[in-house]
Image (cartoon, rainbow over all chains, first blue to last red; front, side):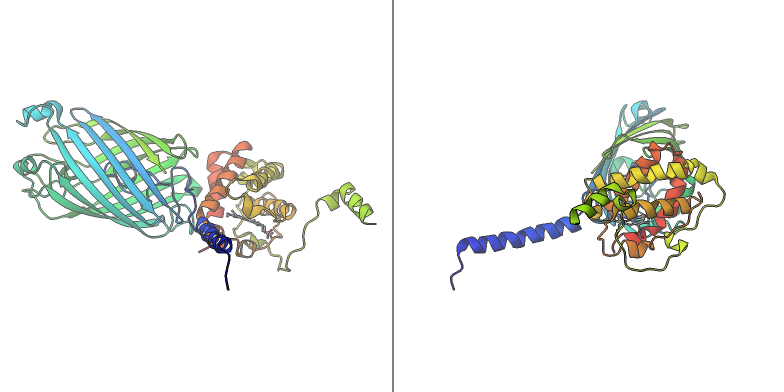
Length: 292
Length: 156
Ligand code: HEM
């Protein structure tokens, strides 16, 4: 039997059309609720500013793939700190991230014999998996729970070793639980991180006081003022491994505003305590985050 | 004869607001899927039955007209939806109603609702509550009652 070519083409096109329609059903356009993907952390993952949350970067739901890009700049009393981060979030389940951090020592570099404006740089690769729960939906008391890992590599190996760090690269492991308690308009996050990073890795990993990873709690609490606007605070406890440079826990108070579905601006007042021998490192942090 | 019936349907308000019959089900206010709030604080925050009625109207209209989820509502019984959704909201907000509709699982069975659709519906509801000037904290308290229903609405 001879089937005319145009019939075959039409049948093929029809099959393709059905396939395309079926795909369109499954892969949904991005549609997270505003701010429920958090902002970009200084380590590139999604979350608060200082601590990762059990959310997945980007605007995609469990039916799609989304991305986030964030640029952060902090002006501290004596230092400047910049981060550029990207993250991809798949199926509201898995997140992969990368960030480049740059810490400018300004005059302190000179005083430490590194030269004025010496910059510490670090690469941070991250992976996060959502294990259970949901931040908004489901049982009112069941948070979203995620586990993640950061692999960090200082680009200043000789210097960080000279300060006393055992290694220039290290791995952080963490678990986070995050919930938006709608009845109080409160978002709460708790993270436990196992780490031996000195100043988040910028000063290397491990030191003369301690080399092994220790477990440190971190937390965020935020009040949702409106659909677009949240204010809150964060806390991140840290190891203190280096004899010559005491290290303090970090705190911030932030306000984040979703300009639209794709852009969120954040301003925070951060207190990083003593950094590389210089005390009282308070300052302002700005971030612009794009999500798609 | 046919012309006369059609004419009558246009004229009488009851006939204009005709609901389609649905499969029989057991009427029970717990079908609403959430226990009502205690006290009248939430009912007042929503402007009582009048406010709730305006919110439901705006909400349903937005859902039918929605670029993303409109097609899920298309060809459904809008008249019935307006009535039972009002009952459900009014009941949960403790504004003096009972709920006579179906339970959430039965109402949304095989609808193929995805997570992003649910979020869009929430956004439409937020816009409707905002238009009625419901304080944001009260909006969230109401959403806290609806959020657990996701498992009965969203597929998978
Ligand atoms: C927690 C969220 C939701 C609540 C409280 C809710 C509430 C209701 C109620 C009370 C009914 C009427 C039940 C009855 O006829 O007896 C209904 C029906 C319906 N809902 Fe929802 N709904 C929710 C989410 C959704 C979503 C996300 C969609 C789609 C995007 C949706 C689409 C529909 C449609 C199309 C109907 C009409 C069904 C029919 O006439 O057979 N609903 N909903």
